[in-house]
Amino acid sequence: MSHRTVIPLRRIFFLVNGGTPTSEPENWGGEVLWATPVDFGSNLTSITRTRRTLTLAGARSGSAIVPSDSLLISTRAPIGNVGITSTRMAFNQGCRALIPRCNADVRFFGYQLEARRLDLQAEGLGTTFLELSSERLASFPVAAPPYDEQRRIADFLDTETARLGQLVSLRGQQLRLAEAKRSSSMSKAFSRQDYMPTRLKYLLASKPRYGVLVPQFIDGEGVRFIRVNDLLDLSGRAASLRQIPNELSAQYSRTITRAGDVLLSVVGTMGRSAIVPPELQGANIARAVASLRPGTDVAAELISAWLTTPEFMRQAADATSSDTAQPTLGMEDLANFKLAWPVSSAAQKRLLAAVQASQEQHRVLTRAIEAQVRLLIERRQALVTAAVTGQFDVSTASGRNVTEGVSA
Image (cartoon, rainbow, N blue to C red; front, side, top):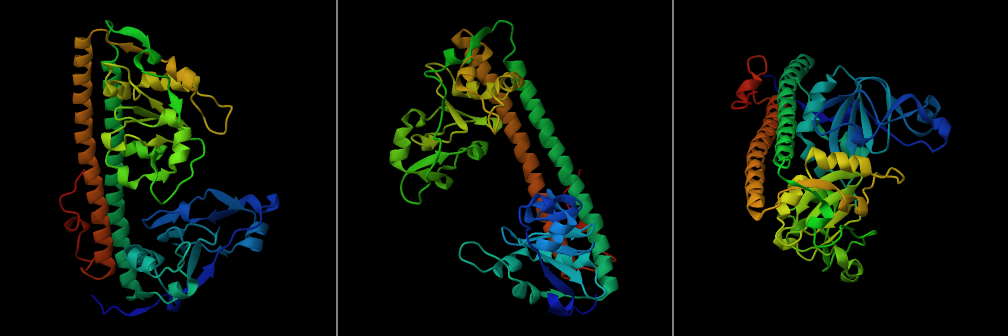
């Protein structure tokens, strides 16, 4: 391995700032791709499409166009995501472009900047939000080995990170299959012919209700506030939830939660459900969340499990209003949804045991797959860092000795 020369980025790249044109229609919807930080992620990637495009006039008047094989780096919200332009491209003020001014493999420097994302973030300044300035980025020190070595390292990392990416994709497929299996299991559990067709409202102690229409968040002591994304993992979230004033929560007292209430997303994102844990008793909910309070001797776990079945989703799709900006499920419609329900307490206990066993099997499986995904991500980070810092010679090393223990 050759000696690693360390020089500032400005010695290798021209830096170009981006921008956003005015809103006139003639500036937008043309053939010029217009990248923003949301168009590329935390791993180095080729940017082949963008959410919005500009006309040539719009790009010239309010942005900047850089050639293909330039690096784009996000310099605010977040700092340090890196992409490679696949064609000529414009970009907004949340990015800066790096155009090679000498013989350089942009992939090598892209991987190096990815590996040093935390160092880039440490260079950010600002009070409202952190931003990496042009001057600090231009002065950022990078290793600059000979071009042939840059190319060898980049070729090696392209191959090995692609392999790891395929493994992550495979784990994603496994998670989707696990969810389909769980959904099928729940559907089968609620499909016994000896169950009684029952409207949901007859299993509840009160009508389903929407939550707070317009929250006012505070930093001091208040009432914990549950939003749609919180339903993904509600247990253990008490400390991280936002808070609203006590007086605002009092105005929506009918949706103040009790332990064992079932919460359901009913606006936009449809069908996420969770049971209120004891530590969140007394919290309140967002307008996009409905509160369902099970009646006496009705297990919340059974209500929550049924809300994940294809039967519930079909009824929700039929009842969802499209008159509003976001699809919305009405509370009266929800109350009248039909499900097959065991009549006797013994049958309910058997159903609950079956549901709990299926849910636990699903949790064990998904946790194992998610742990493998985290391990793959860590291995990728270790591999990139080791390669760009010269910890091993890529002409003799295999990525598998860094990713040992991870297989398809």
